[in-house]
Image (cartoon, rainbow, N blue to C red; front, side, top):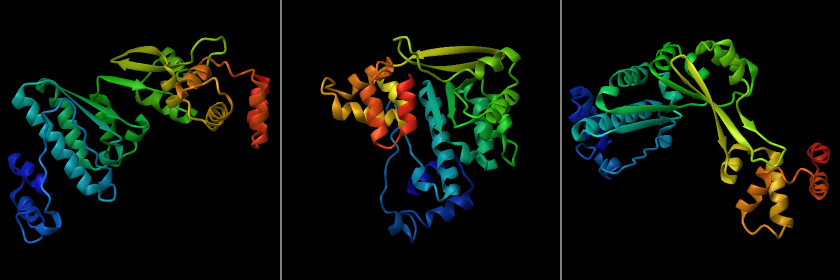
Length: 274
């Protein structure tokens, strides 16, 4: 709270709000509850702030997110440097009109300040269901949208409608996702990038580590566990991931028997039929 007050004073927040906040800071009678004072050092190349600890206090989450964002803006202007603000999983905060308006204002003014704003969310559709109707405005302010795979058809159709995709773009959008090859070529991930009315599908030939991140099904976990336990030729997990990314395991009958023995007959049958 003490840090927050220092920021609020520099940004000329409402005096009554600052006065009430001071009661709970090192300046007031309840300061012993918040005695620790820290300094916000923004001189580093990368600065990360996590607000998960305030998940049960959304009002404070909104306040801190706004203060930190505005502080970055001010510092970027003062130091005349390029800056990228990334908001990860920020969707729950956007249902509050105060924060949504703050984001909209930032998106409209950041470019001339030499700043870029990235927002990451599970689904664009999450932004369209707010009572304050700010989500659509925010979507329209972004010049570029990057889309990964949407699992269910209803979500796909909503994205197509929200972003006004053409017939060809919609067809390509429905194809993107994790592509597992069976011809000894590495698996890859595709995603779609939209800018203005143009759409491009990118292919990411994955390293073993990326394959592990994208492919987190129960089947893959059981297969990985099998090779860790039984195949001494693999010295490192990365070697196993390379083996799996090439689909070299698809004809391994011992693996199929292992899966069946663990009580996964469906996985076992799929493995035998591969």
